[in-house]
Length: 268
Image (cartoon, rainbow, N blue to C red):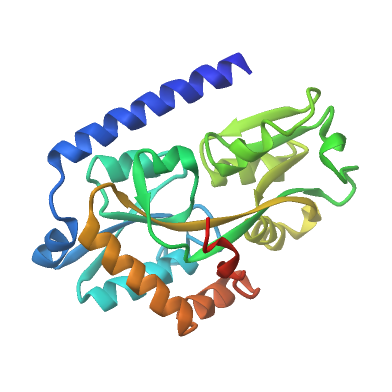
């Protein structure tokens, strides 16, 4: 726990430093995007069905389609900047991306250094494991090895709740978490339900199934702080495309389930 605490403090210090740097070099990002006629959107391509590549190594998934729709409505070219969960904030704060569309869960810690738009989706975080693994609740994680992406929402949610006898095994991204589960290196994983379902479909012999849910968390587009024009445009875009069902259709197409009711997060 002490090591995790030290890691968290160091990570927070780094993010605060990046925030200060970004504010120094920051200009009007919306104007910059329009001037260069290209938007740089960070997407995690190792998190199916939200972001992934097809047989031709072309980006696809619900976040990819959301980014394409946004760029089209902005009237600019889209450049996808590939990221992993842990480097979404650094890529944003150092100007490698104009915004992040990568199931970026809204948390108080992240909101200290970046800004979020209105939610455009939500994830139910679950613990999943092979069918024969005796897990029904948090208490059953005692003596089990559970994989998470280091520093991501699943880490933040599960670590304080897990029993002392559980071992939280941290990996750098969803791809290495998946590999650990498939190879039997861990007993299970904590992840969004859609990603757990995607892993199960891709690896039917593992018999992966959801054991229990932890919490529903909204996710949004992440941008640098003090970008009122960009935030205003993005909020209007999210609201309009939530209302007309466009974002819901993209979610349904790739996730295979209806979009969660985002109204439950309106006051949060």
